[in-house]
Structure formats: structure tokens, C-alpha cells
Image 1 (cartoon, one colour):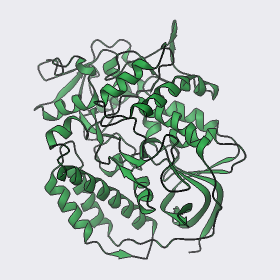
Image 2 (cartoon, helix red, strand yellow):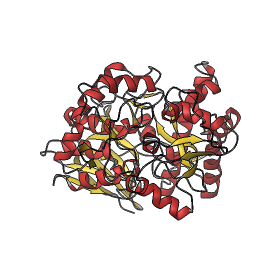
Image 3 (cartoon, rainbow, N blue to C red):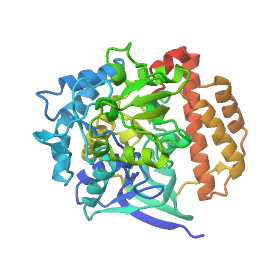
Image 4 (cartoon, rainbow, N blue to C red):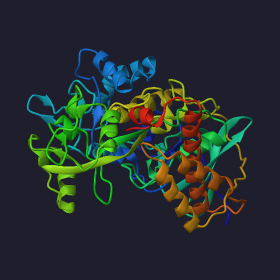
Length: 477
């Protein structure tokens, strides 16, 4: 099959908010290509329910910074948090200029509150479907210099003289080479590596592997967040934290408030809540009897409950993998330590989330740092160089067995024996030059999981935390 060639000034890998925010703010003189592994709407941004945190209506961003630092147990970089919360004050107004219409009620914006926020500062669009509405509007606002290609799997980056100058990929099954003056990784997190997650299934840590292969530094990969409230049903469905902000409480079978011991109650930081729920025996429920206008304010949740025949007044929940705080090390403009390579959004470790992300800071991060990457991008001279890639020669059946093994250790309290076994099993896999889309996708997932496993083991060797402590801090939503 012949190689197809695409040329662009800037290649952005991803089509979520981090990618789109970057594209919207790049100079119109650049040709820009956004690529998505699946359909463009298969991103975590489209699934976002809770909203966007912003101190837009507050006298200063001080309280937002304090809440962010507190949620992270003061492990966030204070200087980077300053950037997030201060520049994030303008985010709501800026998005409105692109046609986003945030929910309002009589007297102004309909602000929500979520875990570890001491104030109502969460802006929503369409109740609990913020991501879908925001992404639809912003994608419609993309200018003519931006093109989007769907079903493109980028399996390697091309470097020359130490600079990133393009990527090797498949569009459907057709191999393509994309020549670019700069590459922006906006590939999202790692949740799609396992089944019990709030993430889109296409979000499988590809950006970590691509960056690692060309020498970019990765940091804090062991910092993984689990969301306390996914529906405790056969298939995972996220139950937005905004429901607790509206008055829902976490209760046990007898109706006792399971977070009554915490000063913030059911609105405690996510890591604290997820740890408690994981340790408890028996089902935990969200009691929504104090939530007014539930169906109007949370239409997606109400519809899901109806479909699954769940009483929306008493919703069974359990923790699930949600967000990756670690990632590709970047400076405050999204630059990596490899010339021509930038990273933004969940794939990047910008230092703002520390060990535990504050609710609804993720979409804000995408917007604030997407704008910064757009200002920082500089083009290298494109080249016709290619890169030979090796992939694991593994059958779909063998791959699924290894993926199931990932699901057994990529948990709040991972089994180190399972983790070591996975590393040993993947260490012995044979490689092949016969590169196909399926083998490339399987290889990216296994390599991403290996990076995570190695990081967790390294943490254990250094005694950074024992497993119960990590449950409370660094491996949580």
C-alpha cells in the first residue's frame, strides 16, 4: 500500500478542548491540521459534565488558587496555579465571544459547586452536558486555516537533527506521513486503557508513548485520579460531582452519611471521597432528595437513570479511573524539552494539579494553556524524512488478555504482583516491521501501560508512599 503524504505548518494530535483552544488562537497565517484517532467527538472534553471552574465573578482569583492548592495537598506548583486561575478569570467571557452560552438563572449565571470548592464557581452549559455543548460550538468556530481529519492513528513522531518535524500515521488502514513545522500533543489521558473508567475508549495514553520515543521527559506518571461517583452498574457512567454541589449526599444502605466525619462532607476532595468509598463494604448511594429540579438541571443523568431503571433519588455509585495528573513535562507555555514538540491538556504535566485535581479545573486548563501554546509555537523547516517503526507481533486474543491484566492493577490500590507480572509478560513480546494499524494501536496501549507500571514501581522502590497513603493522595480522581 503506497504512502500518502500530508503537509501542514502545525499538526495537533487530538480534537478535544486543548486541541481546539490551541487551534482557535493560532495565527491565521498558519495551516493547521487536527487529527483524531476516532471520530472528532470521541474525546473526554465532549463527555465533560461538571463544567468549567473560574473566578470570573469573584473579586480576585485568590480563593480559587487556595482551593486548588488545598485539593492537591499543596503539591501543585503555586506559580503555575497562579497562571491557571488568574488567566482563567477571562475564560468565560472569551468562550462567549466564540458563541458559547453558559446557563443562566434569574439574576445571572447559574453557578454550581463541586468537591473541595468553597464557593459556587462552576459554569455549565446545558446542565450536566457542558462538554458536548461547548465543543460543538467551538468546533463550529474553527477558522478556514484549520482542517480536521478523523480516524487517524498517529503511531510515531518523526525527528531530524533533534527536532520534531512530523508524524507517521494511519488514516483508516492507509499509511500516511504528515510533514509539519511543529507538533502539538493534545491526546488526553489514560482512562481508555481499562474498562472501568469515565473516559472515552480512544483515550489510551498515546501521547505519553509518542513523547517518550522522541526523548521528551515524562513526570509523575503514578499520579492517577479516580472519580468517586461512577454508576455502580454493569457499564460505567459518570455521575457529575455537581450533583453533590446541588445537595446530594453519599449514604450507606441504612441512609447514614458516609462522609459526615469530613469538614466538607460529601463535597470533600475527590481523593478523600474515593478512598473512603473504596474501603467501605456494601453499596454506597447518592441520596438526591435535597436536589431541586434534578431533571431540569441534570438531564443526562436523569435519562441514564431512566434507561437503567435506577431510582434517581437513590443512585448506587463506586469509584472509577478518571484523570491523569502526570504526563509530559512542559514549561508554562506548553513547550517540551524537544524542539518542535508541545503538549497541552491532560497529556501534559503542567504542574497545576499536583497529586489531586480540583474539580472542573481540567477544561479551564485546556483553555488557558491552549492559548499559551498558540502563542509559543515556532515552526521548524519541514522535511521528507520517515521513521521506521517496530510494533509488537501480538494476536488480538493475546492483546485482550494483557489488557485484562492492566485492568487488574490499574486501580486505586494496585496489586504489585499483577503489575510486575504484566511487565514481565510484555517484556518478552516479539517485535515486527510489519506495521499495521491494529498492531500499532495495540503497541501504543501496551507501551503506555508499561510506562505507568514502571512509574508506580519506581515510586514503591523509593518509598514515596505506601499503597494506603497513595490511595489517599496520588493515585486518585
